[in-house]
Length: 144
Image (tube, rainbow, N blue to C red; front, top):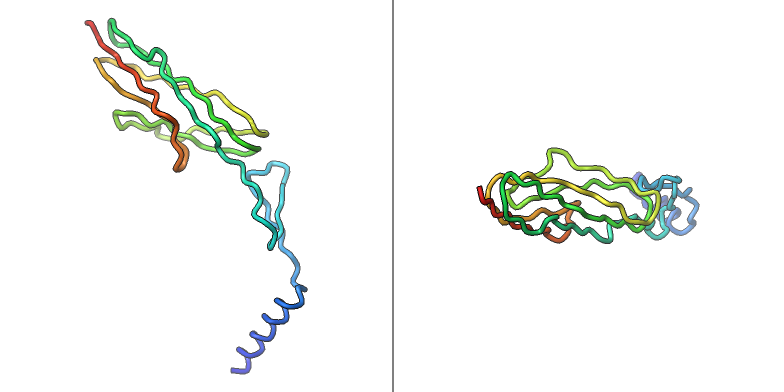
């Protein structure tokens, strides 16, 4: 019981005196070693602010196979790194995500291709964590 009382007194002393040294926390999204101190507001963490994707061509009619190209942009609001993946209407995903690094706020272009061998209406989209881009829809009608 005496140890518990001493521990409670120590906790109360620390809480009222503020004499405990502050621990510096580094943030991996800050390449310059940006820091935050315990008790201060949470540091700004760079985030994806926009992901867009479009299919080129959006519609095709002709001999197959046909390669559909997907062109997109990912915008980040500060320095950091991210991993994104491609999701498709046929359920396929990349085996490994693709890495992007941002030195600061900005937009980077991304692209992908899909070879279509039969008539198909489908889509592809960008995914990162719980964020998704629009579905870049396309339609291929094979004539042969």
